[in-house]
Length: 154
Image (cartoon, rainbow, N blue to C red; front, side, top):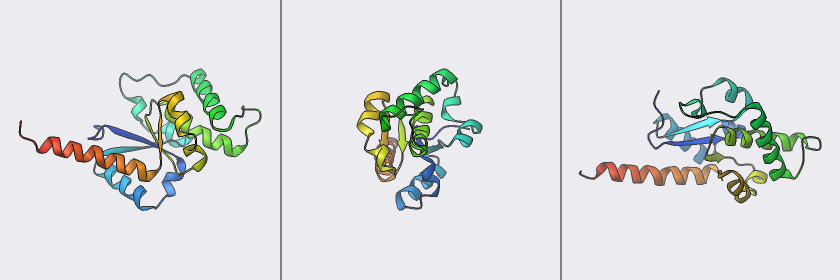
């Protein structure tokens, strides 16, 4: 299996699966046409499915590093530790930590609490956190540039 034509891999919050908004549907269409890849971040799919992180040359996080990244994300999102974190905070932190540990650059979510921390997530992990609408606009811009370059004579 080859990667997406644009080389864009978007890690998606588990809530994305049920999202039927226009932008989410269009992103799925771009994935079906193999322009982009949408990578789930829920625990079961992340553990069992092949991911961009399993590509040759990428070393996935060790259990120790995973725990460290998760703790950093949790502290950044809610200023809590494992001992004081609410179930909601844990649910918010897990997909972000999975994305970081997998080497992801782009994370799609509609969760306002996570989106409010996008500047901090970028500063800490070089992670672009965006809504489905922003991800779609970005993918369309990259696709348009790709198609323009491909249409130019050599």
